[in-house]
Structure formats: C-alpha cells, structure tokens
Length: 328
Image (cartoon, rainbow, N blue to C red; front, side, top):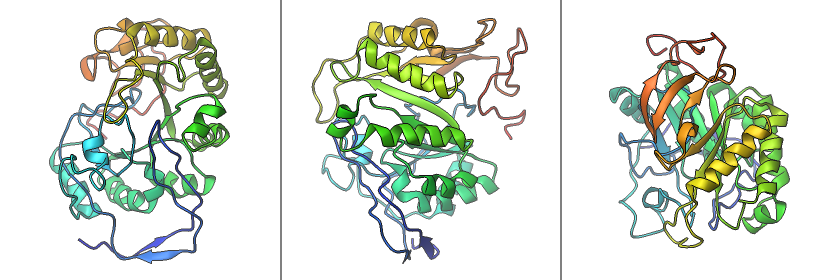
C-alpha cells in the first residue's frame, strides 16, 4: 500500500558488510521524494532470538525485517527474501499504521527495526516509530553501528534503544567485511553520548575475534565509555552459507565474560547457549550480587526488577529502560 509522501534526507554511507556477507548502503545524494516504501516480507508474532536484557519488554516483541546478505545469518529465510528462492515467501506491502496496528493487536510493548542494516531505511523506521510512540510503544534499532551523526540526530527523537553488533576490535577484520573499525567505534561513542539506551553484542567466532587480547580490548573500550553498558557475548554457529569454522563453545563465552568483568563491566551476558553459561544468563545487582532476573535462554523464569528498576535487596538503581507499573 503506498505510504504518504515522505522526504528522503541526504545521507552518507550508513552500513558495512556483515560477517562473510553484504549489507546495503546509502550513497550521498540529493533529497528525493518517495511515494512508497520497500516491500515487507512478513508481519507475524514470533519469539525474539537476540540480546537486549536491560530493557523490559514484558516477554513479547514485534520486529520489522529488512533485507541483508549475511552468509551466517540465522534469519536468512527472512533477510534473503528478495535474493534467495529458498526463503520463506514473497514480500508484501504494508503501511506504518498497519504494522503498529498488528503490534497493538498482539499486545506487544516494543517495536524494533532489524535484520538488514536499519540505518539505510531510517525514514521508514521513523514513520513507523512516530505512530508507535503515539500509542505507547518503546522503540529500538538493532544495528551494525556504522552511523553518521546526521542519521542519529534524525532518529533520536523517536528511538529509545540502540543495540550495536561490535563484530571485532581489529581494523583488518572490519576491512575484510568492507568497513572500518574507526567508524564503528565512533558510532558506539555517539550513540551513548546522544542518550540512546545502548547495549553491545559481540558474536564470538573462533579464529576471527576470540583471542584474549581482542576481547580485552573490546571490554576495555566499552568500560571506558561506561561500565554500565551491557555487553552480550554470543556463540557463532554454522548457518546458511557459512559452514566453518567450528561452533563457539560455552567455555569461550565464559572466558569472554570473565575478561569483561576484569575490565570493570557491570552487566555481562553470555547468550544463546541456554543452561550452559551459568549465572551469565541472568541480570544481577552489581553491588550485592542478588539475582534480579533469572533466565533460561530467552525465557524469563523469575523477574524481581521490572516495574521498579531497583535491586529488591539493596535498593541499588539498575540502569536500563524499565517500564512503569501497568506497562507504560
């Protein structure tokens, strides 16, 4: 369905290639006017397989999917809808209002843009987020962090949460992926400086970014910005067109988490290996170590934090985006 006419603001390149794959980017251009948006593959209620823990969502999430070429993408059936005949199905037309209607109908509390690099479709995201905000939703970007200040200023009034995939802390690795480490580092700093709630995910890939030295550099960099930035270390698994190297082990995630703690980070999560990483699935008070949210994978087993944002034992404030009682 055609959308209202929208001004497409001039933009520099906003996205880099993903690990062993390609994400689209925007070239510099004059402002142009669009009469419709890109097609949408799917609108559905589904479980969220991702890592944002210092954000209360009440257990339900609504995602907007873009399209990216990522060789190890676990969501390739969606992200490759326009490229791979093995994907789920044909895209469909949908308006921002329809998407927010769907989220509301399913009782979701959060609307996010992800899967492809959402910075390259920020006009679309803002149009959706404006309507979502009016109806009380929290909004989020899941991004590679290769942002310009201009685009961050454009989305900031309508975006609460910003999760960045920090893929490596070696420039040679980022150049292999088509980007520059400096751009990502600057993006992380700007997102924090501008007041988004920021969380970082590092997918640990054996032989690519799993050395003690590199993990220490990542943790030290984040702690230097703020020790309260949550750092999620997650396990690579063979998927789509990337069938090597070996899958990441729980021991590697535990090693990374210990490095993060040694560098002063206060909220570290080892993800996507349920039941195999001990206390690093949970949210704990950094002062008294009380367990505030207990998890098994993506399932919340016990929650003594949401609705108040403070430790139930010592009353320490826990940084994050915590909804008030009643879900507002």
